[in-house]
Image 1 (cartoon, helix red, strand yellow):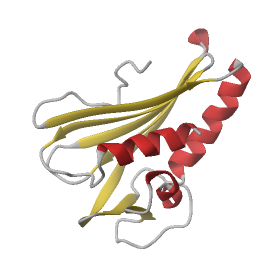
Image 2 (cartoon, one colour):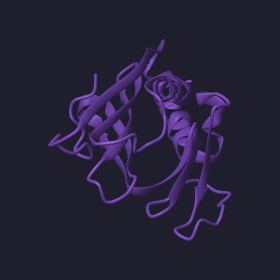
Image 3 (cartoon, helix red, strand yellow):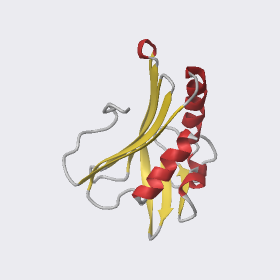
Length: 161
């Protein structure tokens, strides 16, 4: 379903990953309601471990590492603790787009783990009655984001409900 979202950068080096989970709802109105819920779950970083299992944890922090108890904003960080190490990832961008002529809308968060050029973008997309969550990692040299493909897949599934 996902065309290349503009927040997903081009692939130049290292690894590229694309993981998606989608579902078809009964009506477009159901899909619209589910889209709103998926956006809320995406911004509720402190509860992502509900979907990825006990081997990882997520904490929303400010740039100094102070724990935040609110929805994610651009410029916040996500501290991930997966086996065997901990990572701090910057929320580089958050974008919402509505395409009413196509009965489609997207909500995307782009993450950057450091200065190595790697990025990850999580996109929630609703197109008519279909809802999808996708994870796009680009230019990853090492395990910059600290989660396995299975954990990212579980998170995508959890986001769409």
